[in-house]
Image 1 (cartoon, rainbow, N blue to C red):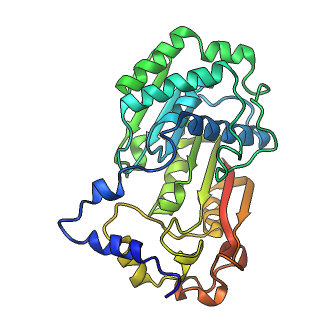
Image 2: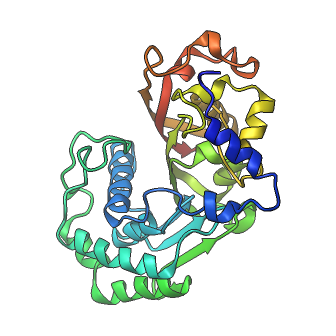
Image 3: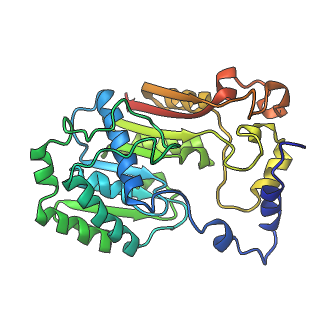
Length: 320
């Protein structure tokens, strides 16, 4: 099979053996959140798009799915004026030392009102913006004076070091996360994720949990990556694998891909009770670098054309 990634198949098969060092070989790092500028760029991109789609004030309480190598995106949110940050992950990647290092760089970026890192520095990052200027219409000078006040920065720093509540600020980091009751119902103003929901096994239960957590009229902002993540030679080649082959590739890894397409996310959002206010798709090249409809496995042979071509999407929704 020309599309098959032999390396990924071997990795999956190896995970069934007791001598396989899964944690050290597969779970060493999760993504880009080890970089302060990356975290800054992700948070401000989500924030700008949210304000373009109906959000009118900085949310007080937020939740992030899959923060990865650091809680830097959440720290950026706290520096923007959010007060309560909840982080949920399946595997613990982050460390307090790394978070503190990122915190110091982020403070400097916000104090200088640095432009949002654009496609030159992060060419693969989504969502893309019309302008990468610092969003002074959202984070005004007066707002930054409050959110970056010395006493508040000390509270954020203490919360990073101890994962708790200090003054007006709180950080809760929950690993592993499998329980929807980790947050009180109707208590969160914003939930976001960056290239995470494609890894969640029980997608319906996750959307149901997020609906419970959100306040009425609360927002969600999710950037979802539908590509194969290296599991195939074609960017959408993971949809060509039958269930048995995919099971062998997945192996005993704690997560990989759920292979759910764009339309499945829209359907679940609607069924759970969310209103989608914005959905921006990015198309992949199926003619030169992707598989075609004739290559799809039986599970996906009835996939919509837009799903087969969608390599990523950013979805903003509101709890109805």
